[in-house]
Amino acid sequence: MITFNYETDFELQNEADYEAWIETIIESEDFTEGEINFIFCDDSYLHKINVEYLDHDTFTDIISFDYTIGNLISGDIFISIERVKENAKEYEVSFNKELLRVMSHGILHYCGFKDKSEEDSNLMRQKENEKMEMFHVEQ
Image (tube, rainbow, N blue to C red):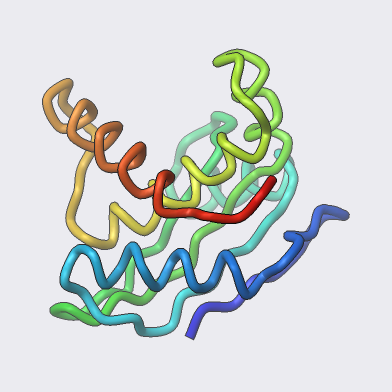
Protein backbone atom coordinates (compact mmCIF):
# COMPACT_ATOMS: atom_id res chain seq x y z
CA MET A 1 0.00 0.00 0.00
CA ILE A 2 1.35 3.38 -1.02
CA THR A 3 0.16 6.46 0.84
CA PHE A 4 0.86 10.14 0.36
CA ASN A 5 0.98 12.47 3.35
CA TYR A 6 1.34 16.23 3.33
CA GLU A 7 3.06 18.32 5.99
CA THR A 8 3.13 21.36 3.70
CA ASP A 9 0.69 23.06 1.33
CA PHE A 10 1.91 20.97 -1.63
CA GLU A 11 -0.27 18.13 -2.91
CA LEU A 12 0.24 15.69 -5.75
CA GLN A 13 -2.30 15.89 -8.53
CA ASN A 14 -3.61 12.48 -9.62
CA GLU A 15 -2.21 10.43 -6.73
CA ALA A 16 -3.43 7.23 -8.42
CA ASP A 17 -1.06 7.87 -11.35
CA TYR A 18 1.91 8.23 -9.01
CA GLU A 19 0.86 5.13 -7.09
CA ALA A 20 0.65 3.08 -10.31
CA TRP A 21 4.06 4.39 -11.40
CA ILE A 22 5.70 3.48 -8.08
CA GLU A 23 4.14 0.01 -8.25
CA THR A 24 5.62 -0.36 -11.75
CA ILE A 25 9.08 0.63 -10.49
CA ILE A 26 8.89 -1.94 -7.69
CA GLU A 27 7.71 -4.70 -10.04
CA SER A 28 10.38 -3.82 -12.62
CA GLU A 29 13.06 -4.55 -10.01
CA ASP A 30 11.42 -7.86 -8.98
CA PHE A 31 10.24 -6.63 -5.60
CA THR A 32 6.83 -6.69 -3.95
CA GLU A 33 5.01 -3.65 -2.63
CA GLY A 34 4.59 -3.45 1.13
CA GLU A 35 3.70 -0.35 3.13
CA ILE A 36 5.28 2.77 1.63
CA ASN A 37 4.58 6.25 2.94
CA PHE A 38 5.62 9.37 1.09
CA ILE A 39 5.65 12.40 3.37
CA PHE A 40 5.95 15.74 1.57
CA CYS A 41 7.25 18.51 3.80
CA ASP A 42 9.32 21.70 3.92
CA ASP A 43 13.01 22.25 4.66
CA SER A 44 12.60 22.86 8.39
CA TYR A 45 10.55 19.68 8.87
CA LEU A 46 13.12 17.54 7.04
CA HIS A 47 16.07 19.32 8.66
CA LYS A 48 14.67 18.45 12.09
CA ILE A 49 14.47 14.76 11.10
CA ASN A 50 17.99 14.91 9.67
CA VAL A 51 19.40 16.29 12.93
CA GLU A 52 17.32 14.17 15.30
CA TYR A 53 17.58 10.77 13.62
CA LEU A 54 20.70 10.95 11.44
CA ASP A 55 22.82 13.50 13.35
CA HIS A 56 23.30 15.53 10.14
CA ASP A 57 22.92 19.30 10.48
CA THR A 58 22.22 19.89 6.78
CA PHE A 59 19.33 20.45 4.42
CA THR A 60 18.49 17.62 2.06
CA ASP A 61 15.82 16.79 -0.49
CA ILE A 62 15.02 13.27 0.74
CA ILE A 63 15.39 11.04 3.76
CA SER A 64 14.15 7.48 3.65
CA PHE A 65 13.67 5.01 6.45
CA ASP A 66 13.85 1.53 4.98
CA TYR A 67 11.76 -1.22 6.56
CA THR A 68 12.17 -3.66 3.66
CA ILE A 69 12.29 -7.33 4.55
CA GLY A 70 13.51 -9.61 1.80
CA ASN A 71 11.66 -8.62 -1.36
CA LEU A 72 8.81 -6.84 0.43
CA ILE A 73 9.48 -3.11 0.05
CA SER A 74 8.33 -0.94 2.94
CA GLY A 75 9.40 2.39 4.36
CA ASP A 76 8.87 6.07 4.96
CA ILE A 77 10.15 8.56 2.38
CA PHE A 78 10.30 12.20 3.46
CA ILE A 79 10.70 14.73 0.64
CA SER A 80 11.33 18.46 1.06
CA ILE A 81 9.33 20.25 -1.61
CA GLU A 82 11.48 23.36 -1.07
CA ARG A 83 14.67 21.41 -1.87
CA VAL A 84 13.06 19.81 -4.93
CA LYS A 85 12.16 23.30 -6.21
CA GLU A 86 15.69 24.58 -5.57
CA ASN A 87 17.28 21.53 -7.21
CA ALA A 88 15.03 21.90 -10.24
CA LYS A 89 16.28 25.48 -10.68
CA GLU A 90 19.90 24.50 -10.11
CA TYR A 91 19.78 21.60 -12.58
CA GLU A 92 17.57 23.52 -15.02
CA VAL A 93 14.80 20.93 -15.12
CA SER A 94 11.10 21.19 -14.37
CA PHE A 95 9.84 20.78 -10.84
CA ASN A 96 7.83 17.73 -11.93
CA LYS A 97 10.87 16.03 -13.44
CA GLU A 98 12.93 16.65 -10.30
CA LEU A 99 10.10 15.38 -8.12
CA LEU A 100 9.95 12.15 -10.13
CA ARG A 101 13.71 11.78 -9.77
CA VAL A 102 13.58 12.14 -6.00
CA MET A 103 10.58 9.85 -5.60
CA SER A 104 12.19 7.13 -7.73
CA HIS A 105 15.47 7.63 -5.85
CA GLY A 106 13.84 6.67 -2.56
CA ILE A 107 12.25 3.56 -4.03
CA LEU A 108 15.52 2.55 -5.71
CA HIS A 109 17.30 2.71 -2.35
CA TYR A 110 14.73 0.21 -1.05
CA CYS A 111 15.56 -1.99 -4.05
CA GLY A 112 19.19 -2.08 -2.92
CA PHE A 113 20.74 0.65 -5.05
CA LYS A 114 23.32 2.83 -3.32
CA ASP A 115 24.83 6.22 -4.13
CA LYS A 116 27.89 6.62 -1.91
CA SER A 117 30.59 5.88 -4.52
CA GLU A 118 30.88 7.49 -7.95
CA GLU A 119 30.16 4.14 -9.61
CA ASP A 120 27.07 3.60 -7.46
CA SER A 121 25.90 7.18 -8.09
CA ASN A 122 26.21 6.71 -11.84
CA LEU A 123 24.15 3.51 -11.70
CA MET A 124 21.58 5.23 -9.46
CA ARG A 125 21.25 8.12 -11.92
CA GLN A 126 20.84 5.67 -14.81
CA LYS A 127 18.12 3.81 -12.90
CA GLU A 128 16.38 7.09 -11.94
CA ASN A 129 16.26 8.10 -15.61
CA GLU A 130 14.95 4.68 -16.61
CA LYS A 131 12.21 4.80 -13.97
CA MET A 132 11.24 8.40 -14.73
CA GLU A 133 10.55 7.37 -18.34
CA MET A 134 7.99 4.89 -16.98
CA PHE A 135 5.79 7.77 -15.77
CA HIS A 136 3.27 8.40 -18.55
CA VAL A 137 1.14 11.28 -17.33
CA GLU A 138 1.02 14.69 -18.96
CA GLN A 139 2.64 17.18 -16.62
